[in-house]
Length: 480
Ligand code: 4AD
Ligand code: MG
Image (tube, rainbow, N blue to C red; front, top):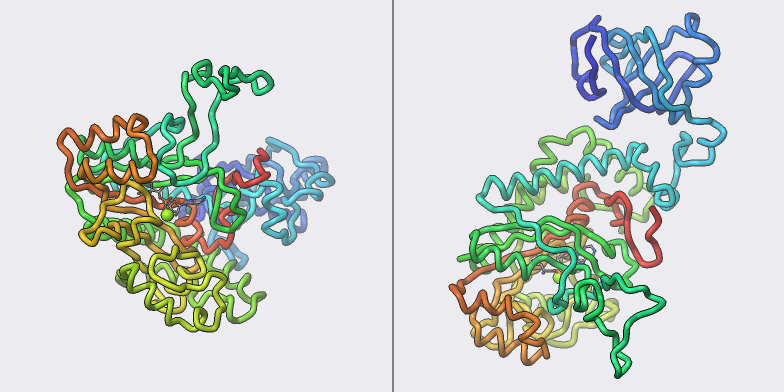
């Protein structure tokens, strides 16, 4: 007898083999056909029960949601819809699921909205949609590691609790062990952080970049892949308060090379799932097509899911300078007709997501890399160009997603970096260790950050970022 996962059995042709499988009942029809799923694949295995030889009591306990162990023999299926099935010799109930209670949950076999599923995030992974999304997420993680490991990058773990708040990537969550009802104060009434756990003010990290830079200037090429936190009050379908970011950092690498690597990396991970996740992708493609049918024509996605992935893999991303992009936007119809919420008047304007989406979805109709942004709308560490007003920044914009990557060539010149910091009021003492890297063997270096959930959104076609992470953290929501 072999103990197997459903995925293995469905691919097996070892008919008459004795098998054992454990999983959760998805459906039980006519006291005869159990659809069993164990999470190894989107597909259920059909287990055919000989109800005449089974006790009434046992049959009653084979209910949707129950965990069971099935033993039987593998057969070529008589019915349509599956290649193999198990002719059951015994069923053990491992964990019951009371039908009356199941009825009140999203496990009940009917269509539930994504909103409803979110309220039961601990159970939603047992649905086809979330099973598929989370398996894909897992494969994408693996592909992230394999891309960098195959290309001589070292994986580094940067701190989650940080003592510097200089990056300015977003609002921070504070970390403290103070009793909030009794916070030590200084004489002037300010908080006395010297008495806090770390003896200083600390936060959850918004990005591992600055620490990763120090490691790149020693290990050559590194990447982080970890959770990051932003306390922005943005309730959109693209923002989480806790999200995972992939941040490679490369020594002796300029912005052009940085863009090459980012593009190559994204194409690799998307190709990986196209090659390795066909069943889940086929399901999600159909899901998206069904969802689209309910939408007005203009809001439907122009391509099927896998077609869209293939399109990204097979075509060059369009590289456009910020200055060119502003010209395009200024002359665009929605700008002239004042359809944008933020009208683009002149060079220097920060781009809003409506502008990014116009460029990607309407104008270029492909992924776009924007580069050389105005210095004053970007972070202090980006390398200043010869023109003195733009920096070597790049953002990658994706259809339906907007910004998926933000990166730059870093300012490696100590004097320029110090000037920048002074102008922005960033205390040199805070970042003494960062400045050290520019004193001891500084070099041209670059990196970027990819929002992992936005990548998963793109790969799965899920419209809301809350549906691509197991337990989303958003304003006013930290259940589970
Ligand atoms: O553009 P950002 O803020 O860049 C940085 O943090 C740099 N330090 C990265 C680097 O150069 N190493 O964030 C990078 C990416 C964005 O492009 C976006 O995909 C994602 O992180 N991101 C978010 N994803 C989900 N929820 C949020 N609140 C996000 N904020 C940024
Ligand atoms: Mg950004």
